[in-house]
Structures are given as structure tokens and as C-alpha cells.
Image (cartoon, rainbow over all chains, first blue to last red; front, side, top):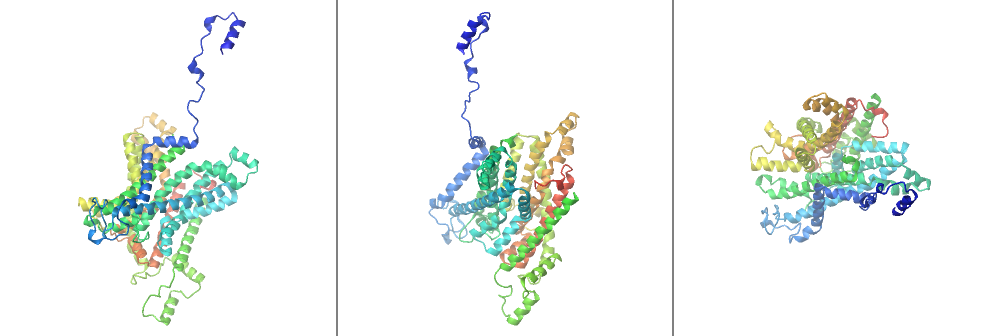
Length: 317
Length: 311
């Protein structure tokens, strides 16, 4: 710059010196990027961190996961240890959450229940995710008649009353951990498939997919590498919202007597067992499972809301 | 519009047929015959019994007999309560369940919409924040958990409301509250977000410019459009309320359909389980159908039969 102005000065002496002003150094850097460029995920993460409620939910879930793994080890009592003289004791230093009508430690059982509830919910969500992505991806990408057929099937399944079908399946298959997960997944994937399909339908006509196609990329690879990564936002949100409904369904089924069988416990089973003693004032037996079911669902719901805001900037306005 | 209704009606019939078929297959995949356990039956009596219930016919014949009985609204006898048929249980329990369900959904709709409107009008204010926290809480707390805590608080601790049964308006408060909170929260969130969207539209600015009172703007102009999304999820909410009655009737000892249903699950009374499932499914699917049709009629912006891609 200085060279140029020197030259200008020399070549055109008619311009007086005071017309020239020194370059403002600060303005020189105005176009420079001061922050490192953020990827989509880093940006979403930063926005999520700012959302206090969602972060509280996330922290609670991390805590819950840790306790589900290590909680039962922390306590000297086992899940199924029956100790009749100690029945229905108030929370104390030996039994932190009290005991139930068979003298079993409610603290240990609560964390054991966390294991089962979280396992069922995560497995159900994972199966929904897998089937939903494959089904929705193919349906959305193929389009036309295939799409029409596949969506008719989805529409019919969507019309089936979810919990009634699950109850019926469980009555026939017999309640166990595996059958609960199967029953929850039979109609659970439909919502995910609809979302994936809608997203793929929007994305598949964009230029980058066309470019990929013109290179001769195979369909499966286009779906996997081009389309799915771009639909991840809504998919993750859908998953965080599927998990609480699976937790609810598991607790609900246990409550109906179609859940995990004794002597093992899930939160729903514990709440159901405690219901009989509700009038005798053993509040702790109902309170702990009830609190953890609700708190977990709350945490997943606020995290899901937070993720939705973070992953979809368009929605925020 | 007519084309859409016809299409939707056919879908409904197909869904119903699938439910009926599914129950039939499931009922027949349960091992054993219903008469195996009965003592004092010899082969002749067994054969007679099987003939009476058409169990000796080939499966496809049984299927059509079953279809016919469903269409004529005959769900057969209860195994565990020989004196009453499934129809008896339905006619005894369903009106009570319906009452509980209707009261709850009415409470949920009215309070949910009001909460949503208030939150939208005080957007990003303290009231909005509180209302939406209540709403997320309402969605997160399962109705049967809420029910138990309500009993513990109001019936056991404060002793101001009865803990169970269904005989006076006082008895109705707790079950209704437990059942209505979840749907109320969902409606409140939905109303709030669609209200916020509607309030930015030109015709609302126009109404403001004309100097209409806020009450009139909200209830006469904004609400009509803001409620459209609420109508769409009414079907799903009804399903939730319906399944909610199963456990709540159990918890509050309300002699409704759900109580028989849960009892039949626990005693493995298959005809009652299958009969009530079919009945409930039919009821729900019919409701979903009606909601869709009403939605199509309400919103003139939607020409449903021309819309193919979205569904």
C-alpha cells in the first residue's frame, strides 16, 4: 500500500498531501476471520451448552448411566436379598432408600431398575433407528411407486394403537426382557421411517447428490454417505424423544404385570409393588422409582428439545 | 374432499381388518385349547365343546366365523367369568370409561389451550417460562405415577379427597387430574408455538391496527388458525387417554372397561383380552378417521386429495 501511494504521489503531483490519510490498521483486518470456522456439530454443541435446562438433563443422564453401572456395587445389599426382619424400613444409614416388604434394599433395586429401564429404552430406540433409517431411506430415495407402497404400509401401521398391540404381543409371547424389546420395536420404527423418508425426499434432488450420481456412485453409497449424514439432526432429535416414550411404555407394561418378572426389578415393577402399600404410609417405596422414572423422562425430553433447537437453527426464529 | 374421505375410509377398513386378523392369529398361537384344563371332561364332551365353539373346523373357516362375529358385534364369552359375555363386560364398563375419558380430554383441551395462549402472549417472559416448564413436567411424568403421588398427597396426607372409586364429582377429581395432565401439556406446547406463529401474520397486525381489543384478537382471529395443529393430534391424544384409563381405573378402583381389561390380562382370559383389544382399536381408529375428516373440513387451505407427497 505504501509503495502504491508513493508512486501515486510521484506520478500525480497535483494531489496535495493532506488528501492522503494513513490506513487504519484495525480496518485492515476487518475481513479476517477471528474465530476458527465451526463444523455443524461444533456449532450445535456450542448452542446446546448454552441451554442450561438441556445441559442439566444431559448431566443427570450421565449421572444416571454411571449409577446404573456402579450403583448396585456401591451398596452392600444385593438386589434379590430377602431379609424379612428388615421389612418396610425407613431410609437410614444402612438402607439409604429404605427397604420393601421383603426387606430388600430399595437403593440397590433402584439402580438395578435403572439398568433395565435404560437398557430396554436404548435397545428399542436402536432397533427403531436401524429399521427406520433403512426403510425410510429406501422409500424416500426410490420414490414413485415403491415409495407409495411403502408409505401405505407405514400409514396402516401408524394407525394401529401402539400400546394395545404391544400388550397383545406380550400376552402371547410371555413377558421377558427380550419380548418387551421386540414388542416395543414392532410398531415403534414407523415414526423414524417417516422422518427419514421426509428428509431424504427433500435432499435427494440437491446438486451434491446429482454430482455424486454423475460419478456413478451406487445407490446404497449415496444413501449412506450423502443423504443420511445430512438427516442426522432430526434423526437424533427423534431418538432422544423415542427413549422417554420407551421408558414410559416399559414402566406402563410392568405396571400391568407384563414387565420384568420377580425377583428382578424395573422401575415400573417397583412402583407397581409399592402401590399396595400406599395407604400404609410407606412413601419411600413409591417415591424413589416414581421420582426416577419422571426425572429420566424429563431429562430426555428437555435434552431432546435442546437438541432440536441446537441442530436446527431455522427453527429457532 | 369426497375422494379423500373415501380413501381414508378404505384405509380405516384395512387397518381394522389387520387388527382383527392379528388378534385371530395371536389367539390361535397360544398353545393349548381353552378346554384342556377343565376337569371332568371326557373326550366326547371335549369334542362337543369344540364343535360348539367351531374349534374343530379348519382355521380359515374359524377365521370367517370370527370375522362374522366381530362384524355383528359379538365377542364371545368370558372364560374366567362364565356368567358374563365379553359384550356384558363392555356394556357395563365402557360407559364409565367413556365418562372418565371425555371429562379428562375436555379438561385437557380447555386448560391446555388457555395455558398455551397465556404463554404465547407473554412470550419469553416469566409466565411463559413457568408455563412451559410445567408443560415439560406434565409430559414427563407418566399418568400412573402422577396418580399414585396425587393419592399420596391429597388422600393419604391431607385427607381432603377420596382415594378411590367413582361415585361423586369429588371422586372424579384425582383420576381426571392424573389423566388430563399429560395431554394438557402437549396441547399447551402446541398451542403456544402455533399461536406464536399466527400472531406474526399480517391479518393480526391488521386487527391490531384497527384497534381491536387483545381479547378479541386472540379469541376471534388468532385462535381459529392456531388451533389447527391441535386438531391434528387429537386422535393421538385420545389414544393416550384411552390406554391411560387401563391403569388409572386399576389404581383408583373405577369399575370401567380398563379394569376388566387389566384383570383379563392378569388371569389370561383370552376372549376378553382379544375382544376388548378389537373393540378399543376399532373405537380409536374410528376416532382417528373422524379427526382427519374434521380437519379436512375445517381448514379450507388444505385440498387433501391433491396432496400426494406428504402424508
